[in-house]
Structure formats: C-alpha cells, structure tokens
Length: 410
Ligand code: SF4
Ligand code: SF4
Image 1 (cartoon, protein in one colour):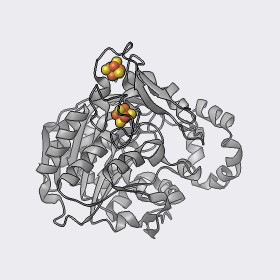
Image 2 (tube, rainbow, N blue to C red; image 1 turned 90 degrees about the vertical axis):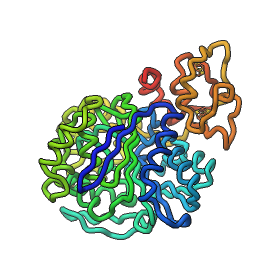
Image 3 (cartoon, rainbow, N blue to C red; image 1 turned 180 degrees about the vertical axis):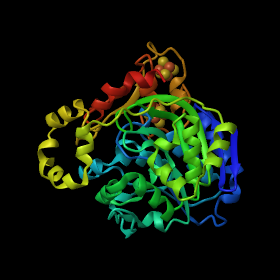
Image 4 (cartoon, protein in one colour; image 1 turned 120 degrees about the horizontal axis):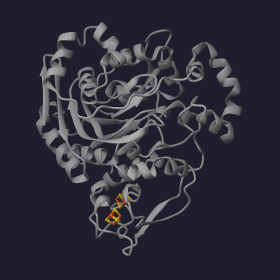
C-alpha cells in the first residue's frame, strides 16, 4: 500500500484486481478508516458512484459492481442499515429517460443487498449558486446524507482532462441542471466541491479509461483502489499515479488558486509517490465539438436536437468526433443462462470478475437473484465464448461491438 499524508488529509492507494482482492482491500480500507465512519448504525449513508453513462464498467466508464458490492458488504458487516446508492447520469441519458441503474445492473445488485437506489436526476434539490450564472439544483438525497461516500472512476475527459473525485460531483446536480456546470466547467466543478464535501472518497481504479474519454476511450488495467478524506488531494494524487499534469486539469487549477492545494504539496506528491501507469490523454476536441457545447449556441442545439437524435445522424456526428455517445432507447434483455463446458478452458477469469463472488462451478449454473445479478461481467471477460446468453442485445450491441475484444484483453 502507498500512503500520502499532509495537513490537508490522507490518501491510501492499494493494489487490487480480482473480485476477491477488491473485496479484501475494501474491507481493509474500511477497517483503517473506521474512525471516519458514523457512530450511529442508523445514519443515512449515501454512496455516490460514477454511473454517468450506460457503458459497462469494464469499458472503464462507470463504477465497477465489484467495488460497489465490496463497499456495501463492508458497511453492512459493520451494522449500517440505511444505505442508498445514488447518482444522476449525464444529460443525454436523462433526456432519453434511460435508466443506467437498470442497464448497468446496479438495481439488481442493490436488490441483492437490500439497499435503496435513488436517481438523483429525478430528486428534489436545493439551488446552489456557482459561477458564470450557473445555479444548479443539488439533489436532496446528497444534501441530507449523514455520511457521503464518493466513488469515482479514473478516466480521461475530453473537456476536463481527468475525471476522478471532483468531476464525480457533476452527478449530484439534478437533471438538465447539469448543463449549468458547463457554463465554466473547470470553475464550476471546483465550486460545487466547495459546497458539498464527501466524508470519504473511495476510487474505483481497477479498470480505467484512457484516450477519448469519458464516453469513447479505451479501457486499461490500473489495478488500484484509493481511499481519501479530501477530494482535492485525492485528485492531485490520482493525477500523479497516471502521470497527468495537474496543470492540465482545469478544476485542479482552481483548487490551487483557492489554496486547497499548493506547489509544495504537489512537489511532495511527485517525490513521494510513483507513477503507476501513464494514461493516454484525450485528443484535442474538434472545433465542432467545442461549438456544440457553447452556451451562446444552446438555442441552436435545442432546435436541431430532433434531427441530431436520429440514429443515422448521431452515427455521423460520432464518426465526425462531434459527440462521443450514441444512445439507443431499447434496453437489452440479455441474460446469462449457462456455461458451455466444451469451450471453457477453466482459466477462471469469470471468477475474477464476478461481483457476487460466484465460483467456477456456480457461474452459468446459479443464474438467478440473489446469487447472480446478471451483470454479464463473466461473459464480457471470457476469452473462449463459453458463457451462454439469451435475449436481445438492443442498446448493448453498440458497446459489445466497440468494447468486447478490448475487455477480453484486460
Ligand atoms: S472465463 Fe470462460 S473460459 Fe475462463 S473459466 Fe470462465 S467460462 Fe471458462
Ligand atoms: S455469474 Fe456472471 S452474470 Fe452472474 S453475477 Fe457473476 S459475473 Fe455477473
């Protein structure tokens, strides 16, 4: 384990890759940080993962169910009874009424543990005043949490440089109010982190995303979990681990300017912590992509939305690198129904990725809740095509075409 401590807080970095390693590490983290956890076992604990899109976690985009499962198990082992998993996905997902909780199987996982889910996009909120006229509502579930755990990813972000704990807070703004954050993204990400402060940050750095993130990058194996009590410091350390210059991350620039971080601290981080794995940065955004986010052209964007939302037009915009996300409305109906033993080479990769901890003799055999949450991670990673699915891919087909072979190589 690596650990960095200063008067601003502490960040621990652990190595982990498989389900067993991730869960053992999360248990150790909670034990090490027990003093931070609430005294009352009835405290309202809110876990805010990054579920910004409907892309399977193994693409590097969203929080891994293995991490969510490990956190919930650790909290329940300690007797916490009021646990909620809450997030609000990005505005494109929200506008189309897509449920990432359903598509990412978070609902199934929550059901297995008997914890609540809240779509923050549909929550009531409190207006917070940020910069450049931004005044988003921040979800009540977050504002009223008695213990707030931020669970970000580590991924590149074409506009924000890197997405980790501070960027994860865009998801606490309700519904289309997230658009306000883009009035000045770096400054407003920084500002919302001053208004709402997580009690604990637990970073899912198992599979990261690099290149054209956050919606169209490449997954890479980082194999780390981080825990911290300071989102600013956490993100400075995250930059170091993946060799991302913090000066290229606009919200961190604001954190430095406001005195949450300073050059001496950055020097200590660089000298005391190693680079684990350099990340491939996001390519420069095209002029058209930048224009598509311009606040002054928001009216035009709304006017052409019915045309741009057409699948063929969206595909053209994706190919022209104007957008990263192309959404289909129909959820998949895929289900794991078996394992073809004639194809299975007993490599046990499926076991390493099963969030509920099923063994090789159980994967493809126990296919109902609560043992199996139908996340299909086993199928995503199986290099032999030995896991048998039934149902229609629908919206998932696009990400299967885009990511299946990359996930198999993780
Ligand atoms: S990943 Fe595929 S080949 Fe490997 S043990 Fe699992 S089912 Fe068999
Ligand atoms: S058996 Fe496969 S589909 Fe079921 S929970 Fe485990 S990884 Fe997910």
